[in-house]
Length: 337
Image 1 (tube, helix red, strand yellow):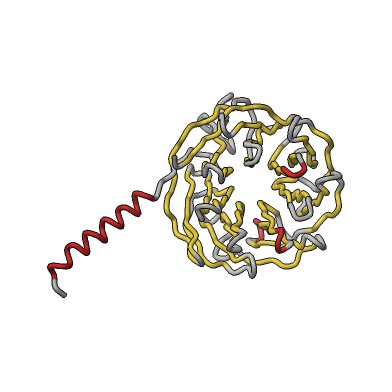
Image 2 (cartoon, one colour):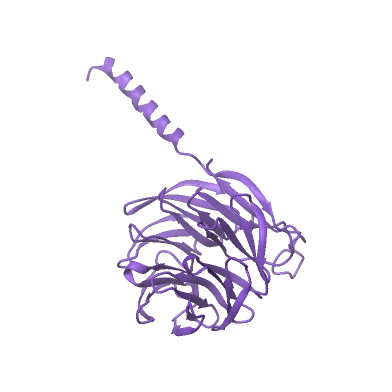
């Protein structure tokens, strides 16, 4: 090769590479939203159409305006709230109240509770399935799913599960709901027509799956696993296609369909961000957040992610957890802009 042509080629290649890297924007902290109050937290849910963020907090669901980053209301009387399922086409919100074994049916405009529905023991994750306008409440201690008609608020089925359910997602086109069985290291596939479990798929090499997200266009499930791994599974056959390392104590996963990125938020104060490319998954950023910020919501309109957080005092001998400082509860906001 004539070496006099090599230097310009290398220079152009380097410039192109640097340009590509510069175009890839990284997530960073935008702001934080002070919520205050006492009590623990669990899931967060976004209603993109209404520009609202719902945050579970003790015995209420706090409602935040996504455009102003201000608290604009709350849903009362949700003892031991875990999750919030938003049903925009019904104008309703559903909360899973773990301490009373009930789901609250809430008017999305007034935030008033319309009724409460009996479930199995300790409803945790909750999901609105738009294909049949049904709500799935996954009962952690009861090892079952309570299916509720979203329009009437009546229970239409109780589905036994072979393990402890964690987070779930729906594929209306396939008439299926997928749910993690944490203690079995499996994903259960529920037929939404018959309300029965069709099959279960092992998540190996992932263990104890908690969070779950879904790329409906490419039929990919993203599973946050307890052995510090995010696994990507083919939702058509249950095959684990790829996996990447993540932090410790994962509890939530999200997928941004516009950017093709999957997120895993962990208790150790990290969010792993990975890029999906066919059957491959590649970590593109490990975002530093805050210790204890394990749950997350995503707004795909702005590509921002939201994590619940609080300040904690020193843990005393014999205490399982460090005490939360009163009034320190907040939501951390991260984005690329």
